[in-house]
Length: 319
Figure 1 (cartoon, rainbow, N blue to C red):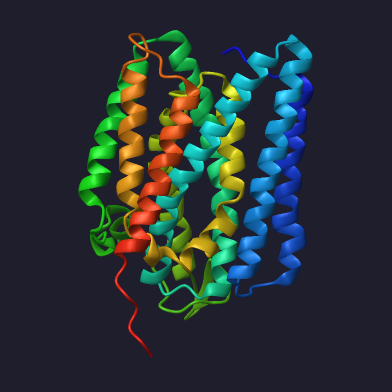
Figure 2 (figure 1 turned 45 degrees about the vertical axis):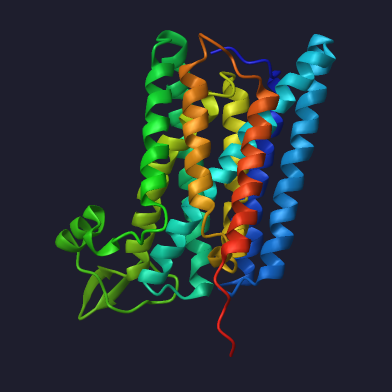
């Protein structure tokens, strides 16, 4: 797997990720469990997005400096931006599922932050492994591109069909399996995953939640990672755009949770994006769709579905 990024940029990316996780787990932990309002979530979302754009600028400069080609630097920077936007868009679907899980288990808002923080770390580790494995497969077996492409098209069709329907969490196989082999407390014990009842150590509902969050990310990673490989085969761009999109997931969750009902058509837009990206991957040996067109299509679909969502939203009942 070849990459255009120099070693020092890999190290810089590693420092950014470790520093971000340090802020989440050490600095923000001192705040304790607390409700995250829209204003705080918006501020952090802006910080994460700004950090990603600054990193992309640094990436552009690194490519320009090492190759001397402004055109190549522009192309690679655009690939990063497109990949980042796709991953950020698909993360919205994760957020809707997270919201459903938190609602089902009646997770108090102050406890949701810790669950999401742990979920983000797990997602980073999981996706790094999957990206490296996917990159190797594509380098060794070109036909895997067509498998990924067909999978994305089918996933997009399935997402379109399921859009607007409430998932049945009661019949979730993972949840049934956990309840079958584990004794679960009916009550929360702060932010603890384990508690003592009648002298026995048993799991709290928060443990069930973190297990379902982890399973959800595995499922969505299988969709989102092939999608970004349709934009670029450079493992550095795939990994960095993916991880930087994930780092802002916690703030993005609390921001969208407050307005999720206003974008009821967004899943249809995400389904169309997956179908488009899958088709692009299947046609790669016939016609390679330029990255700029891919970026324009993704942005256009997102804007269109958000505008239509707002215009067709049912008016909220007056108090």
